[in-house]
Length: 347
Ligand code: NAD
Ligand code: DAU
Image (cartoon, rainbow, N blue to C red; front, side, top):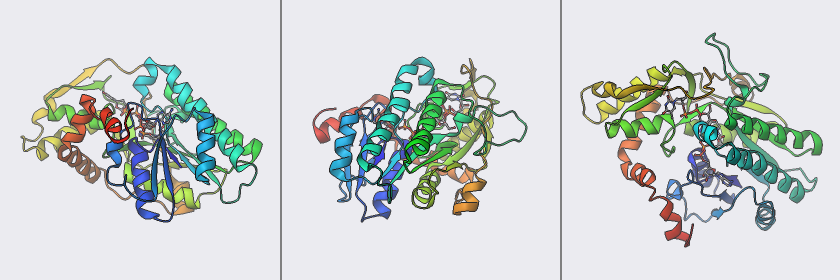
């Protein structure tokens, strides 16, 4: 069972598993919030080894029944509220889904598996934001870095990580937690920096850079994250935490310039023509200065490494959004919400 499979990262994980493991039955459990979009999965929706179930992870009884019905033996849990800016405006929803929803899944897994842990796995997907912020001093987040979340989003994710570990330590539930850096690539909701800015450049709208654009993020191509999840789900050690990242730090302003130049070039505009769109705006409250992940443990233990150079990944990503303008337009207009209705009769 993959939760949050209609979202950005989840859809890449679902696609990878459905294609790579024809003998598995993949159940995608997703509530279809604003961030869930079944159009992300059109290419796999008719596969015999795939089933979509619209459900809220907080619906404990529903999850319990589905786990029994489908005889679920592995959970990859991605469902969450994921956008920091939204968490600043509405922290309740973040606590509800990210904390209570995770607890509901843990409790359902505990009840259904009932101490028969062999061949079972509860894999929780988390974020590097739980570690707080780094100074501009070359330091990195390791698996031993203490938790110091700052935003309501990261506080809720941190809490869910603690619940997952508590279920391992208290009940013996076979869990794994991974903390990943910023993902980018196709199918990301255009509220996040990269797709938002590509879309704005396309329409020649302003590019609102928070503060002075000095904040640093560590970017990883989403398919590399999905490959890491596959590797860890199958070969990771129970009870462990693994950091996932690409050793790929970028200052926001430098990334935005790269985005403008790449998008302009691919649109046949003069290079850098749209740099004038960059507008410095009021900073995000509590804006973490720098994230940077040390993923040495994952490389040394399980041999995973990112496959794409950043410039190559950005070019591929910009090209995807420009080639899939209908996907972007469907999302920005809200039309994508009607897809479920057409397919399944009601959203
Ligand atoms: P997303 O917002 O694109 O997708 C979230 C998905 O979860 C959506 O399909 C949504 O419908 C579903 N969902 C939300 N609430 C739900 C609920 N109550 N019940 C069932 N489904 C629900 O998120 P994303 O960027 O793909 O992130 C996926 C996971 O990875 C999250 O747990 C996030 O914290 C984590 N993560 C994200 C990044 C990143 O850069 N995007 C990096 C590290 C970790
Ligand atoms: O580090 C992992 C996290 O990365 C994930 O856990 C989150 O789910 C994911 O949303 C992402 O969080 P960020 O806050 O880092 O991503 P976002 O794309 O919102 O912002 C990236 C950087 O760009 C951040 O420093 C804020 C800045 N920014 C963002 C937006 C949307 C701007 O300057 N302007 C903007 O309009």
